[in-house]
Image (cartoon, rainbow, N blue to C red; front, side):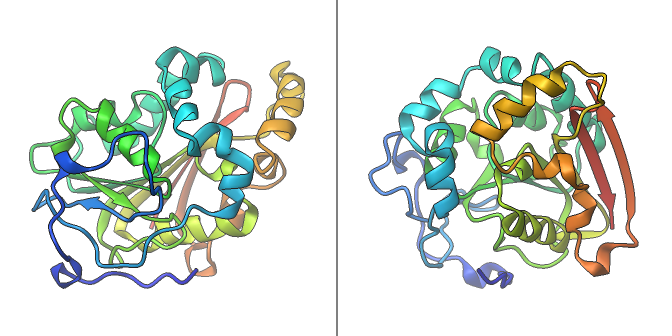
Length: 270
């Protein structure tokens, strides 16, 4: 899929009232929609975004089917999946943005749990937050769980083909997305996140990592990941920086690991 950036307001088409958007039971999950920041009733004039085949085949049970969304959208459950580390990892990612978040922020992929809610609480009155996801049902879920969805713009986009201009965001955050993607898709996601961040801006990745040999969860997670998250083991074998485009190899990189090495935070400043 090509990555052609969208330029300016000329790309915006007919208005779409937020309140008339479909609920969690989506008849056509591939219909592209957006709620714009400066005009809360706008839609990008682009072909519909298709849910990738790998996502339909591998993760239909977790992210695509409406029943899956209803099941997994429980704070206690997402915290359990991360062995009680959700709040800590969420705050580690958000702390990279600051206690008071300013500028244009992009969240790539919706997140089960209260990640976006906590991010919104940190937004400066002048800050703008955009959230993209390839699955329309995920965007509807996010809209429905936010007390004030007008504070963000919601975009039906593929992380490998972000429809934003180059250097258009001050910070991009990618929270537990890379492990769900095949290697080629992951490389495109990383490249797109870096493309849309401004010079001096940050891209924050939080995801799985190969734990220490002394971490007992290492041996618990191997069968779990190989069975349920087959692409996640890539992050045990390679570094996130291995998927950086050549032009970003000289960027400032800060990597920290947590919970015996099972999780990592990688911050790339371009």
